[in-house]
Image (cartoon, rainbow, N blue to C red; front, top):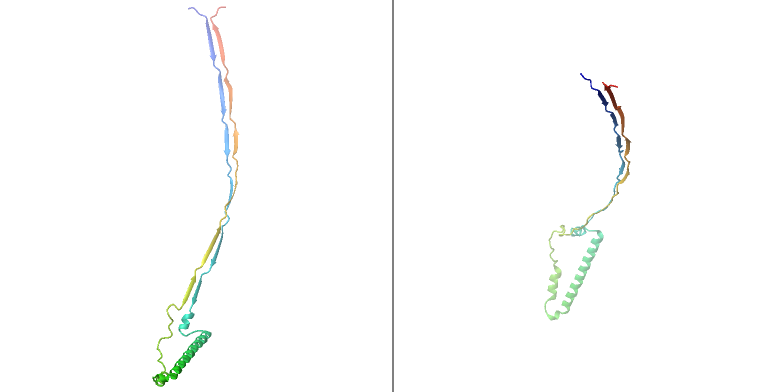
Length: 188
């Protein structure tokens, strides 16, 4: 058997090792500081009270219950009217007697007039007349004023906080390349 010369090659590939550390990013948002104050509204209410007026003077007078000065005034007026009527009657009767020659009998007619009192009327005197009580009403008035106040808002904005840790990539040679050559059955 013939031995042939041989060249043997044995190779080993290089291997690269990659180690990765991931980057880290953190974001923190602090809460904003917020204060809100709402001042109270200013409210004022003014009321003008209502007025009711009742005048029952006429009703009292109709029932013959009046103030003494009014009663005196009425009696004075009635007395003056009666006086004037008496003067007018006497003047008229005097004229009739002066003209007796014109005929008639003024003595008899005047005796009949003056000798009998006139009939008095019988009527209920203590009931007031219709609508003798006078009323007037002025309604109440309400004035409302409202002054609104805007809210007082105080806001403090806070910026976000960032923290960043960069990632890294490390490469190494895990295994070196290698080539081994061997010869067999060589003749030198």
